[in-house]
Image (cartoon, rainbow, N blue to C red):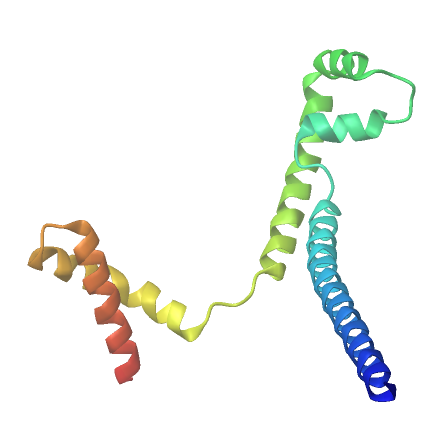
Length: 153
C-alpha cells in the first residue's frame, strides 16, 4: 500500500513538473513575441522622430493643442499664403530627407551573395530566355546558373 501511495505521489509530481515546464515554455514564447514587437515599435518610433513629412501634417502638428477641430485647422491651412505654405513644404522635405537617412541606417547591409546575384542575374536570365520561351522556366534556370557561378568562386 505504501508503494502505491508513493507511486501516485511521484506520478502527481511528474505531472506537476510537466505543467510547469509547459507554462515556462509558453512564457518564453510570449517573451520572444513581445521582444519582436518592442523592436518594431522602437524602429517605428525612430523613423517617426524625423517629424511630419507633408506640409499639411506639419501644420496640423503646429496647431495641435490650440483648441481647434480638424476641420478648423484644415480651413486655416487652405487659407495660408503661398510663402507660408512654401516654408512648410521646405520643412517637410527636410524631415523626409531625415526620415530616409534613418531608414537607410536601419537597413542591414547586403550579403555577398545578394550583391553577386544583383550583378550577374540579368545576363543569366537573358541567356536562359534564349534557351526557352517559358519565363518561369527561364527564371529557375537563371537562378540555378547564378547559384552555381557563386559556388565556383
